[in-house]
Length: 180
Image 1 (cartoon, helix red, strand yellow):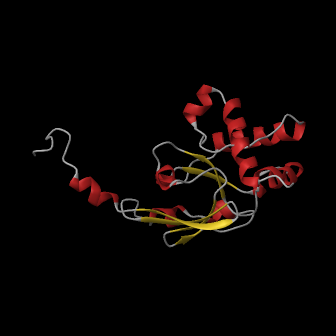
Image 2 (image 1 turned 90 degrees about the vertical axis):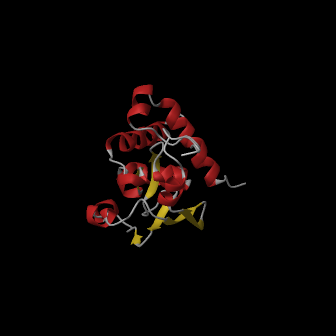
Image 3 (image 1 turned 30 degrees about the vertical axis):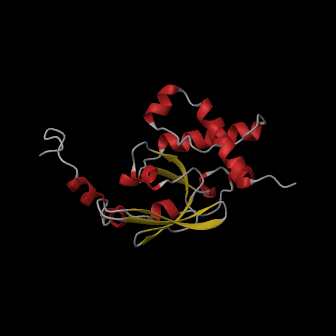
């Protein structure tokens, strides 16, 4: 029986999170809703270490609050293992999500492959992350509806976060109570 890759990815992240120190988790939290089952072999320890290093060192994407990586972020000796254990490809994938970020509110999960964010299409390949320009990200109005297209578990999905300015305007300020 072939192992379920989604389950494998889910168990590996738990393993990654359990090895992170509390200080690392506070500095760059790894999304803990899914996990990846990485064993104790030398290659699996190296893969775990590489993921932790990327999550620690890489800056999250603007207000989306996600750290992205793809197969090209791994040393050539780890690429086969990253593909087999984490389903890493040349598409940018979520490896960490900041608490309270738009990514968390959208329901992004570890391993999600990003295709599109509103009008911005995510590139593929070894230079994918550097090809997303700050100017492109800056054009996104984070206060309006956010629409994403992702691949999760081999299937395309659309995620949406409605206009948050309208719901915020309907809520009275905390110092006025419900009567105004």
